[in-house]
Image (cartoon, rainbow, N blue to C red):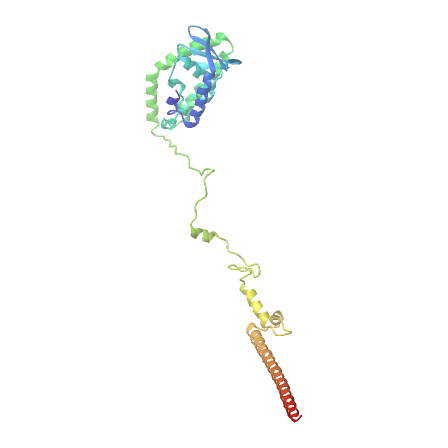
Length: 315
């Protein structure tokens, strides 16, 4: 049964169905009562020799050849419950009957026509199905209150079912008329627009796009873009001005007095040259004085040596 449904059900529904098949091994189906129209079975869970108090009631309708479980999992979720599978295993049914396979949970569910091209939504397949289901559910709710109502409604359902099948030919004629009328009106349903999934990654950007979107650095000193404080040309220019400024003169004061940069640099350079010349002359004068002092000392030493030699020879 699992090998059959793995090719029919979608992945999500098959995993749920597989869980029901595995759990059905812990259930035992035993006959409780029976009649000509229906047979009632009790399905209870037994695990490691222990029996649980809670059990389900399963009914098999012989004339329609269908089974219904009191848990109503098949009616609500659309696939057989573990109790129904336990009954099928007891009857040695190896493949799941098609009557218990809803097309909406199959892999090819979208291949069937789910919308009528009649133009009027009130005559579409889903609208007719919903209208009939609503009416029948009202009757079922009232009839399920007593056994008499239930048996009466079951008999009427069987009669209506036979009569509905006899109306197939007439239904085809009506469909032909409605199709000829609906040629004037047609509705086209397109596939929904594709949206990006939550887990999808970001788009890969080229190096050119990254370079264009990259924010340029701004200098904190002058506020210009393209450099930082370490390579700021304004700060470098100011440091040069401060280096060449003469004593008692400030570059900021020169700007306040209206002196341009060229005149300031020229004046500062000339003053620096004069200062350098004076320093050089002072150094040369000091060197000459030192040389003269050394020469005087040398002459004194020579004279002293000569005098000592003269008096030594006489003695």
